[in-house]
Length: 324
Ligand code: UT7
Image (cartoon, rainbow, N blue to C red; front, side, top):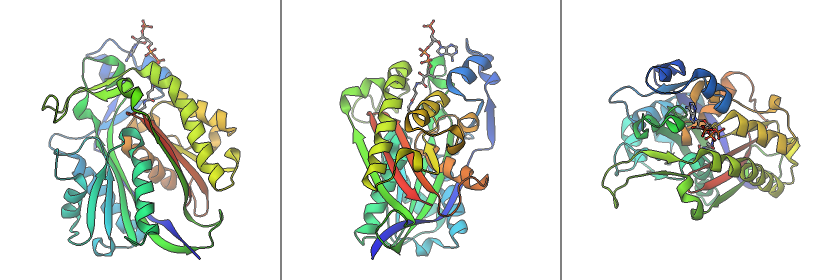
């Protein structure tokens, strides 16, 4: 017998306000056509004034609990992936605990920018496998609209806000790739690339939150190579070939990166969950949002084999293989 961290519920939240590409044409030297063709993005959601990362994460978490048929009392730990916390501290995880009425267990945040959900899932899996927790809420929640430079057309048209959540629970498995749950993961980071994507402020430097800066074309060149390699490494650990997966669930930054990675893995776009057109890049929220939407659309079904992969600031990148 092997313990596996199995998905028991999924939920998501997108803010009410939808911003189409055309809205950027009113105050920036850009076009709907440029944004669509270069990134695949058509619209994104922006949080309302006063709406925070923990508000969105709490709603996604509540929906994931409902989906799992569980209550906050059933949960031992909350792991939140975010780079846009409500406050420098306390953690968004503890704020979500309070908002959903969870008074037991523990919570903490994980910060690996756009790869955050992959790192959070890997941590949650480790908590379950080590016996520290039986049921874990894993949440990705972001308000990137709050760190945009609205004069920088190369970045502010790309990002959006939202949250997604999974409930993972310990179940017995046979220890092979036919098991449901998290089967493997691969994590990487390399600080030499930090200038490709960063925020130009912080507690111990400027004392301000700062704005996002990105050398998009340099990052683009790293992305396909690193994403295909990390997905391959994670799949290799469980003896599964790249083109044997049912679904690639990629970080939703750019349709051209998503297509390039699928091609490198030898899979058609029919096997890829794509939400970038509707959400933009929601950083750590993008994979749980894609999982939730993939289930809602009837694409992802119980027993399907998934590989989720992401890259972002750090650079930090990685992949998780799981059977739904
Ligand atoms: O989530 C973390 C991971 N993030 C990523 O993976 C993002 C990776 N990078 C990308 O997705 C792409 O590089 C972008 C979508 C950001 C940009 O696409 P690109 O094809 O790499 O374009 P570029 O940055 O090389 O810029 C091409 C041109 C430039 O003009 P010149 O120098 O050729 O005259 C830009 O100034 O497009 C111009 N440009 C724009 N034009 C209209 C940049 N932003 C815009 C804009 N509207 N919004």
